[in-house]
Image (cartoon, rainbow over all chains, first blue to last red; front, side):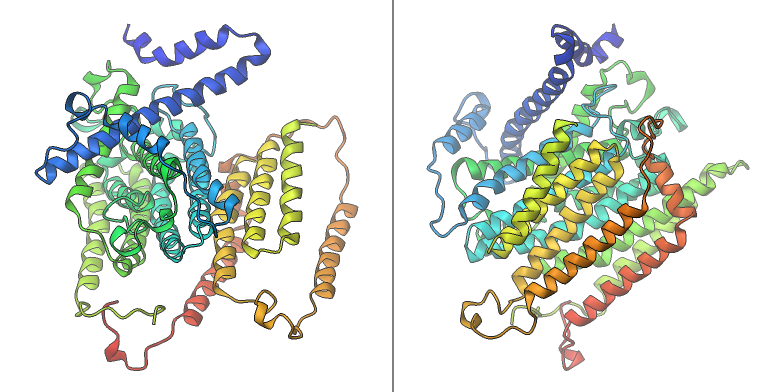
Amino acid sequence: MAQTLDQLLVLAQQRLVALWPAPWQPWVAAFLGAAAIVATFGGLFALTTWLERKGLARIQNRLGPNRVGPYGLLQPIADGLKMLTKEDIVPRAADQWIHFLAPILKVVPVLLAYSVIPFGRHLVALDLEAGLLFFFAVGSATEIAVFMAGWGSRNKYSLLGAMRAIAQLISYEVPLVLSAVSVVLLAGTLSLPAIVDSQAGHGWAGLANWHVFTPWGLAGFVLFMIAATAKTSRSPFDLPEGESEIIAGHMVEYSGFKYALFYLGEYLSLFAISGVGITLFLGGWRAPVAWLDWVPSYLWFGIKLLGCIAVFIWLRGTMPRLRADQLMNFAWKFMLPMSLVTLVAAAVWHATATWTFAGAGLWRWVLGAALLLLPYRALSRGLTQRGRFGPRRYRFAD
Amino acid sequence: MDPAAIIAALLALGGAVAAVSLRNLIHCALCLVLTFFSVAALFLGLGAEFVSFAQVMVYVGAIAILIVFASLMTRDPGTDPARAHEPRAIRPWPLGLGIAGAVTGVLLACVGSSRLLPDVATPATAPSVRELGQELMTRYVVALEVVGLLLTAAMIGAVVLAVREPRRPDQEVGR
């Protein structure tokens, strides 16, 4: 019974595909997979906008949306209708084609990225051998979209915002990929389902063998999530929007549904990148303890994803926005060295896996933790001392 | 031939032609991005997953951005209407033809010196990422390290060129 429940979605897809003649079946299967992904994560997007507004309202001692439907639950529908019926304004000087294509190019690669994420046991649209690389490759297309939006609008705030956004995206891509590489190093594969399989089984005290339960994994997960926050330009890294400085950055000249597409793209990439973080470090769709294995795998994935979203909302409600120079300093002087240190710690963990003497597990932990904590202490000391606080002089703006 | 391969090849060719013929530099760069994507699709069609994704990641994610930033931040006298009448230091046509001729010559020499595979050859299995990595870390490790060193040197050089040192070091605060 639990088996059937676990494979419910896979079986349903197989049933539906079997209804079609054989030459059509691969196309129908691909279409079903894509439709399921778009429907699920589109729905999750709607739910998240409501959750976020409610959560932020609670943090700010307000009620949040409470007029449309019970608990304001129909608010996303009202928002969607508003966006659809708004006038679509294109500046006269704008580059019509580039202005038009940018929001599409923002959303499509993100949807492609979902195809390699395993949402449950056997529940992955495309099991690519280089799945993780595919994810990062399609993610890099969003930088082009941001540039097209900023340049095509023919507005100085858009262009400034786009430059800032691209600088941020490129800077945080490095620690993001490097912290993912440590998992690849340990798992020995780039395929996301295989990475989930590498975290199978239960170790000490019945706890799962997730990568996050190792010293390098914990550091890698934190680094990955920080870089993911910056990569999806969420608060406190929402400088690309920076409404108090550059209004809305590259999205200034977008209105109505095109603006909604940018918004959708941002949330979808947030879910996708959280999904990859879950797959890499939190054991993917696996249960945390053995006696909870009967819960269907996709539910575990959903629970973890909602947990990640809750953390992102919490961060947004409680953190002030960084300044542009702080953002860059943080990326290059802290995130990059720390992700390299994490990589070394992961390599040491891998090399010490053959230790068999008494208390080897404890010693591996001590060694890994020391490898991470000492550089962390030195880096954070070095970056915050030496009287670095003072008026900011802008190097390229005077 | 596979229709997907034909579409990708046509897109790659169209993008390449547009990239050299359009007047607007940014449009050219974006057409070049289209070409990069199509070439990645061709690689994918040939079963070279890793090369395809690396192509997208490096060329679309980094090099295309580099190109658009470079064309935004530099001003070519040829596109500046105020200076369009001044004679140029470099004559573009002979230079372009020379480079195109050299590249075509090298390609022709390579194609000419290669041999055709027999038609009924055993289908070669595409090398996996693992094999690629092992080759890179064993057989080609010197080349890999040299490339890494070169790139590091280039990056340090770029930083040195770009950063203007402030005159008095005591003004250097807040960074």
